[in-house]
Image 1 (cartoon, helix red, strand yellow):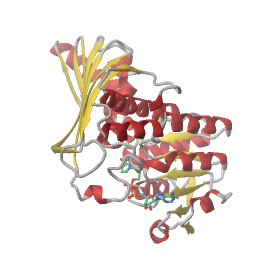
Image 2: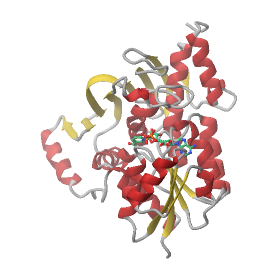
Image 3: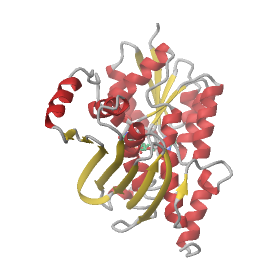
Length: 358
Ligand SMILES: NC(=O)c1ccc[n+]([C@@H]2O[C@H](COP(=O)([O-])OP(=O)(O)OC[C@H]3O[C@@H](n4cnc5c(N)ncnc54)[C@H](O)[C@@H]3O)[C@@H](O)[C@H]2O)c1
């Protein structure tokens, strides 16, 4: 099979993680072009990573027939527009998290991928950790008994300076704050382990930054499997802490890795059993990109496809809806719900700011 051509749209911070991974897989692919509305950035990245072409216009990149896969590394507000354009141009698309800004956008992306028979993948690198595969296997095989409680702590520390970048901290461009852009990694991890959420009740606020979007959020959820969950997310919390713990009948298991079982003999037995679970070959973006490349080459689904990426968008929207209305919210959020669209969510945020909802 010929090497697949790669184009990267958005040549900022995260683009280099994509470029490095595509380059490391150069037996099977070739980095061809960068596009960034700031053409100097596109040129710098192209020169840094040995790509032949650069442009200020992403549509120039999409017009190149030698490109079969596009990495989208722009801010969240244009993920949907660019992904849809790339899929319509016949490219496979790997889009950075968050997948997009609304369920309406997610559904259009998924539909466009399906209609064009192209693959759509979303970057959630924590799904490729040894912790994820171990906990998933333990839960699927019922080794810990039934899960009944999940705790997620997604505490990040970001300064006001961090939010000076033009798109960050705004509803229009970042489409939310600590929930949709930071905790989304842990939300995806948790949903990948625990399955769908049925109901969410949440509060959000902005406390430590001069930004529009929330820098702290608390949510309680009920999963379809009957378990409860308590989710904490913030970009104003020092020191940082990242933890997901699932409590089950026989003990608990966590990211970062910890397993504490009530029966110590069973603990040793399970630790031995876990040694036989294969460890992921790669971590970080390398893992996501290598999985996506292999999916395109073999025609299978990527580990985190559009439908998987949509799940964390739905819970984030549920958290915002609950915080804005002050009510518990049942999922799924359907197309006739105003919060299904980005404009519905942003109008509700504005109305709340004016004191219409209290
Ligand atoms: N997976 C992760 O761990 C991870 C880490 C950091 C960022 N991200 C995600 O990556 C995305 C980008 O973040 P970043 O930190 O690289 O941002 P950034 O601001 O450093 O880079 C974004 C680039 O996109 C360009 N751009 C914006 N709109 C464009 C358009 N229409 N056409 C062409 N170029 C355009 C900008 O000029 C900028 O250079 C965000 O969605 C962010 O959440 C993911």
